[in-house]
Amino acid sequence: MPNYADSTEGDFIDGEDLRVRRAAVDALGPLNGTVVVTEPDTGRVLTIVNQKVALQSGYQPCSTVKVPVALAALSEGVIDRQTLIRVYGRTTFDMTSALAKSNNQYFANLGERLGFDRVSYYAKLFGLGEKAGLDIDGEQPGILPHVVPKSGIGMMTSFGDGITLTPLEFAALMGAVANGGTLYYLQYPKTQREAQAVLPRVKRRLDIDSLIPDIKPGMLGAVEYGTARRVGFDPNEPIYGKTGTCTDARTPTHLGWFGSFTESGKNKLVVVVLLTGGNAVSGPTASGVAGEIYKNLGLQSYFAQSHTSSPTLMISTN
Image 1 (cartoon, rainbow, N blue to C red):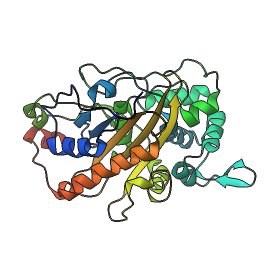
Image 2: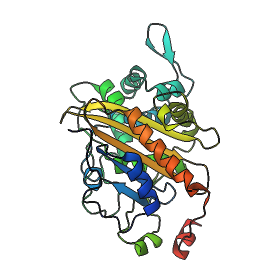
Image 3: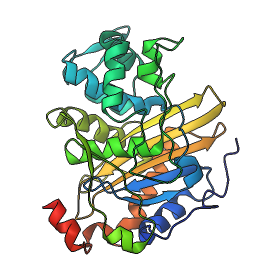
Image 4: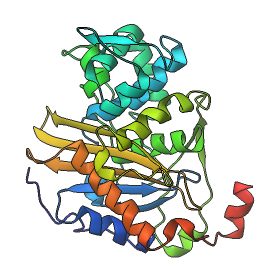
């Protein structure tokens, strides 16, 4: 698959936030990939760049799978944030450093401790393997395996072997982490009138509000000193994220993932970037694209502005 393409070809944008779309298109540039931007507190999709890729049945999640695995391990009490796991020699990692540096041995160990059944249960609970959207035309769900992949449970929980993840599924999960545990149906309006009338629709409440403080330091660390440094760290406007880099065994295609959210300012966003192509593709590269999106919107004072909501949306939110 080529590293470069026109990733906007064929997109239908009548219901999108055009400022957000322009920021995403400019940041993606000629790279072959897709960008999904959503509102974590409503589930509204603000833009999808390269809809034909974002809506299909997904790609291997690579190390982005470590976010739901971390939440599963914390939920089951097999570890806590301070638990040290030896990964090689005398080197040990805790949850924060393992997420920030995306340590594979740490998360393979969590997979062995959890077992396939519990990993599968939490993956389904967090929205993997099902459509993320509410009646989004053309959306296909990702895939969860029914049995342990031949590569083993450790590869499943560190690289996402056997799983396909869609950018919409990942955006919905990141939105739940950003908002404290509400998994919303994603809604993708077709017109500006529909966009003004979007009412948040809850898919389910996730009992993760007490666990989110245990994973956010690692997701912030990824941006500050870990695999997502290309975002650009600003302590006054923190961005939380997780990268993923691998080769999808089915294609084979090199993949670069980055899922992120910001919680400063008046307009909170979830930004998911998926790049596809050759050897030049990586999670750090995808994080750089996301960083440019945040930067482009910041230059427009997007996060400092109050957006006008419809009366129905205000009532629903209240």
